[in-house]
Image (tube, rainbow, N blue to C red; front, side, top):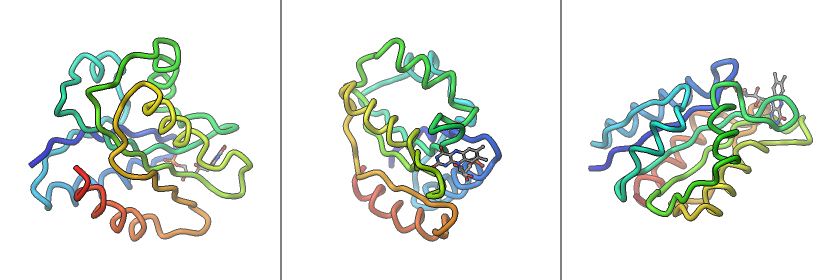
Amino acid sequence: MHHIDILVATTSGNTEYLADQLAELLQHAGHTTTLHYEPDYSELLESLTDQSIWLCCIASHGAGDYADSMLDFAEQLHAEKPSLEQLKYAVIAVGDSCYDTFCAAGRDADAMFAILGAKRLISRLEIDMSQDDPDEKSSTWLKFFIQAM
Ligand SMILES: Cc1cc2nc3c(=O)[nH]c(=O)nc-3n(C[C@H](O)[C@H](O)[C@H](O)COP(=O)(O)O)c2cc1C
């Protein structure tokens, strides 16, 4: 049994819905979850232990920016560059392939966490909202995430 913090970057709610679905699936698999709809940088960093697992569901907005609910978190992460050596994580990047900056925020988070020493549990999932079925794609990916924990 693991505890998973689910960090959500959303502006219009699609990624929040997706994160809710994933939390339910994780709970059915016997794990516990905390949803962070507006991830609090200080709280999450202060509560890091070597058991910490973050599942980050990150929509891109603007010109490849983080969606609103995680803008502050991303800004502080880039400014402070903390050590994340205790952390295990995985990223689901949500975007739309009609933008040149497809999934740029999720890609940035994935790269930043790795640079800061965190352990990537599984390769990033990228969801193209104009092509993919988000539920189907993410639930298949989640099975591999659960195995990797
Ligand atoms: C104003 C606007 C800007 C966007 N910019 C990007 C972008 O730069 N890259 C990308 O991959 N998707 C972009 N998208 C697509 C969103 O990521 C996609 O609609 C996603 O489902 C939004 O998730 P949310 O409802 O959780 O905020 C943009 C969407 C909007 C409305």
